Length: 285
Image 1 (cartoon, rainbow, N blue to C red):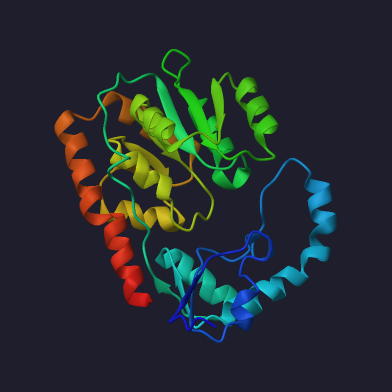
Image 2: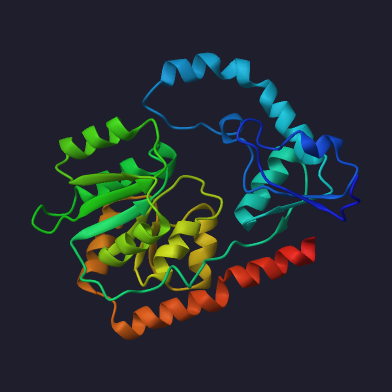
């Protein structure tokens, strides 16, 4: 009723694409990084597997709701070429790309002593590849093996991951819902950022860690591959535990110089800023 020019719509927790898209007479831009993944791929899980599979048929109407709502948007934008392909396959739509950005005034290098620790960020689930990272670190000799810190919003596989780490003598710490300033502190304390999600549409935390001057060791899949192709922030490998652990050892034995850290920060500030992202979003609007 207020005659807005356009409505910017984000995903809904329950239906992914929100119902409001169906009913808007005002033009809309829907920012969608991925479809509801449980309906388009096999989601790995250990905990509550039986309940999840039994209830899946009752959730199938959400697949139709999500697809119908998404197709009602005037324009859909997404965060990577990888996500663009996933949306076209799931919804039959052509989405435009609007890369995300990093707040480099917050995520930046700090003069902190490095500890024998690696950090990863993401929900405590198998989709984030934390189990792969644990098994990879277990291949490093106990004398050199770093502590793994997993930072995320929680998740059903925390106990499984803790048990797996214990069985392989990998020291692990879970940190849940910490502040951005604390996250920056951990980035600056760690020797490397490790990242191995399955089918990640973008991987914003990788950029945040790199902006803090961390070398990145990542599995080159999904949107992560696109990020790493633009900048040289560390090492990308195939999903192979021996290769991943070797890349971690290489990062530890070749620490970044101050010049390398500053150059990495400057490159990210130039190529992956929120200002640049917002300019592109404005064009879509």
